[in-house]
Length: 249
Length: 249
Image (cartoon, each protein chain N blue to C red):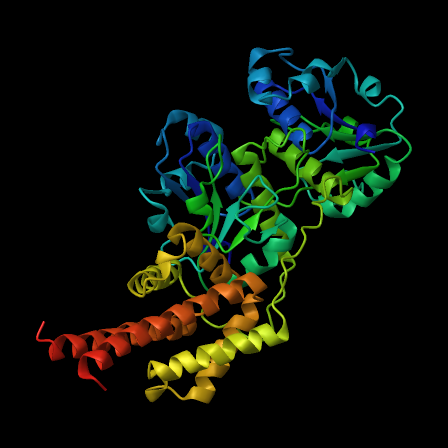
């Protein structure tokens, strides 16, 4: 699916942005880059900022027209900084992606980005079927073109569930009996050290139960916490024993 | 709300990345940038890549430690390139943001990013309560740090727009300093009762940090847990004193 999505950069001025866009694409699993009349390309600055995504640059298709870059494309998604543009439908990245993923199951789809200074021309926007606006701070909407590529490719990859993390096996959670065993052990220990002389036992145990309920303790962790209680009590017992022995009690 | 979220960049090597991060933040409506020991800052390259977000750079707080950067923070979200990290909870950006937005209604929250080469250190990761992994191409997961800032700030801004306040007001969460104070107190107490004679201190404290990170302690709960530690230690001290007095030591 991701192999049927192409990123099309129109008239990019700074080769560094082309390199950073290639890097952004590759991290998100895209590899088809089309460049319409880039000002400087190839360029060492593009490779420097690609930071290992040089293969994307090497395979990039340089075109002299939008029509050439959109060859065979069935859905063109244009980026716009405006919320309302030439009365075409303007969507958020998230709202637009399901259609991109759906179309790219079968046929080429293009994500089209304009120049650093002025974005896409009206003529270019008219070639798109959907426009996307990345919602930004109204006082500072100057998103870098490679940053916009990053956000779009990220949203696409999430929508495609391209790199959904494998379910991490959950640690063995402590059972009811283990939790109750811990709370009984805790209460005994707190009684022994006279903690309850200044705190209401019922209310205090309720607070502690609430805290540890939120932590969702694992079996291993119950062992650690009970280990601390056991060491606390045996340390106390040693001190008391030493005292009693010395007194022959 | 966005004014209570700070972006913390730890030991950033390239000033251009600091500038690009500032630009990314400002487009998404964030403005609090904290820099822990940046290699070069201020630097003209940072301003060049900030492309108009110079105010963010001018107000950036340069710190010499993580503790200084996390002053008063009640939720620290660490970025990791790994899916499983020191067994702390690892979430996707989207899954993590509702809690960030919720916390930032009332108190400071930090989004913590590591170095370009190696990300956050284990010690830094252990100060976080939540880790975020941006799902990437397993064959090329090299996301630029400013691009990661862009993705996180974008997700945050989308989540903030969709935010519905929780029906139940949240309890006052413990701050970074309160949590660190608790862990120091816990470690002292465990040392005193010889708990570490049979357990590796570093590894054990890591396990305990992980457990209490998951619990998202409230200020009151930190007081209860430290109360238990204080009573444990004073009980020990009384036993020891009684013993020593009887022996005229």
